[in-house]
Figure 1 (cartoon, rainbow, N blue to C red):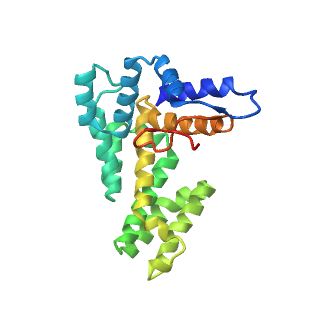
Figure 2 (cartoon, rainbow, N blue to C red; figure 1 turned 120 degrees about the horizontal axis):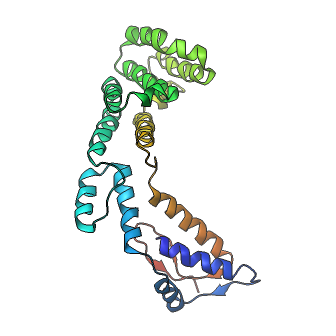
Length: 242
């Protein structure tokens, strides 16, 4: 994909001053692609970065054996990180907090926003399970003091407590907090914080490269007609309309 993006950028630069679209044939385009050399080691690093960041520990280990590419972090830490992420996704927030502290207590000590969001998720799970009295007590003792210190925390707390005002949450304007997507959002935030604590990028590089590819194609579309990739899942070149 990065090879394709380099070729697109070259053509975009060459055609920057053109007043009409240039037609680039498939033969010419594929020749340009073949002329750009990408080191296999760099491609392997890109794949390993994706596997490690997304937590595919078994695939990362197998890829290391097959390619010789070394991960930037100890693969054993991926298992621990994924255990934290899974705990949040399953609604076991107390377990997740305990696991994070076992990994590195400084993660939550130095990130009050993350800790608040985990505590907020605990409150959401109490409400989901119908533990109203426990939820109110938890909100008052654990979250309200933090809300007094931070206005944005207070707003989020008020939104969450609003769930208790509706017997039928389907009519609640903040019912999205009970969606699985909220768990996933919190889990993603925890995952990013753990990666950062390990001096690793919190996001894989591959999706960013794909976004750059689509942006570069959009730029070139204004200058030329050429075989482009419309479906990233297949990465097949499609000829421009005649």
